[in-house]
Amino acid sequence: MKKLGQVILTFLVILSLSCTKEKNAVPKSFQYEYYPLAKSKVWVYDVDSTHYNNFNNSVTNFQFQIKDSIADFFIGLSGDTIFRLERYKKENNSNTWVFQKTIARSKSIRAAEETLDNQTFVRLIFPPEFGAQWNGNSRNNIGEQSYTITDFEVAKEVNGTNYPTTLSITQIDENNLIEEDFAIETYAKDIGLIYKEVKKIEKDISSGRILNGFIYSFKLRANN
Image 1 (cartoon, rainbow, N blue to C red):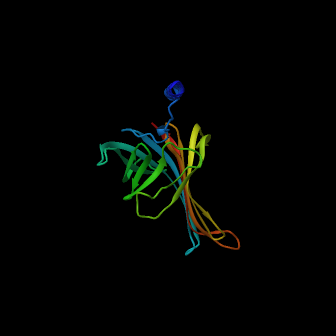
Image 2 (cartoon, helix red, strand yellow):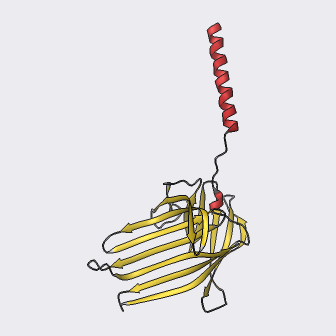
């Protein structure tokens, strides 16, 4: 009986120490700051886009600005807050912003989502960590696409501005002698998307010259 009492006492002491340690542990951060959403937030990007056409052997470059502005928000059926973002475009030789489309963004406990052209993409998962993978197309019918966090909590310079804490998500990276298919997004803490690059090209197998396709990039110019 005495031994049983000692066992119970030891168990209670261990349980008490475990609970104390758990209470004193630093709560794990879900790093929601990488995908900030709030009404009236604005991001302005410099866009550089190059199109290759092997039909007429042409290379065409476009440079302009894109402004993403959160105009409003509403509560969705699942109870999540959904932010309505309006996208505008401005040519470099113009002072006029022209409306392009509406985009929806939301952030749940575990994921950040964006609905663009009637397709929903899982842009980021929480908490993010280096090497984490998920199906970015799990909320649409395009087909499975593995997203991977390939840089995490690193400093980066974009468009002349230094960002001390960023993460990068490689959305696709397929490369061979005749094709390149690549897409990456970089997010900065408390800022959101600061860089995006998409490349989808066909190449001459002997020379490596680009024959057809496009390459474009978004670089954050300003935000508030």
